[in-house]
Image 1: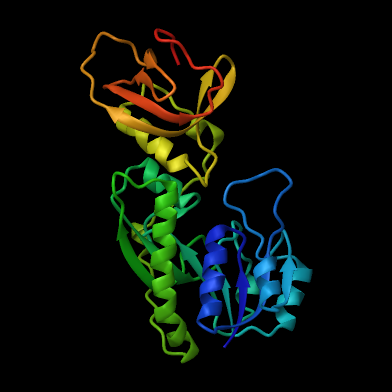
Image 2: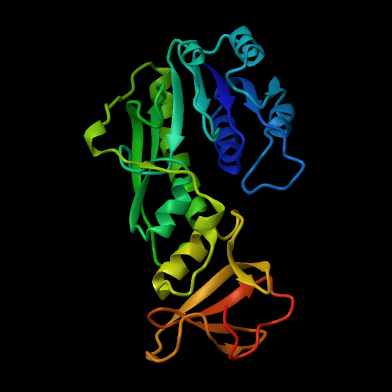
Length: 294
């Protein structure tokens, strides 16, 4: 079974390396070059391909005629597209006889769309899933090949959840790769009546407003921590990145949200709508003073 692999994020690199460890016949890799300005969770797969003497193509447009021609020359039976933030058009979808397998880290048909790991944590979900599916012209709406649930703990953040997704997806790959190679694999249509689509995250979605309750602030910060760009608060006309916080239960109903209650090198305690949060990791160059407002 001849496989073309498409991907451009760290998850893609893990899945490609897993395929190669399983002796899969990867005949070509399509990836993106790293941007000049650092962006979260981007990975150029060329080095992995070169190490294993696999032809690779660096492209910004997976649907471009030149990209299509390059893929076609390698005669794939199937394409794996794991980590590419653009829809694949019909011409390429129809090229491999077995289709294109995509991946989405939610329990499809629920929660299709953009930034799934971030929204999962922002919304405080306690369970999600790793889902491999056959790509169609819509977003994340094709027949499910493999789906495996995982739990999300209060302590999970973007980094640990990402690791959970990689571990879960790797187990699934071990199971369904031999099924695909034998041309004997499951396929379950999605119930589109149960679907919702998450939108693209904006800069404003990452701003901490201390009029939020403590749990909402906590969820926002853990959702946007590394490998993502971090939640931000405004202080003296500057964006301060917040990487880690802790919820505090304080009964102080007469204190306004945003007031700094304590400030030290270890912790900046700020009043929230229903309690307080301790900012533990941040990019403050000079600490706010007790009594100031954020």
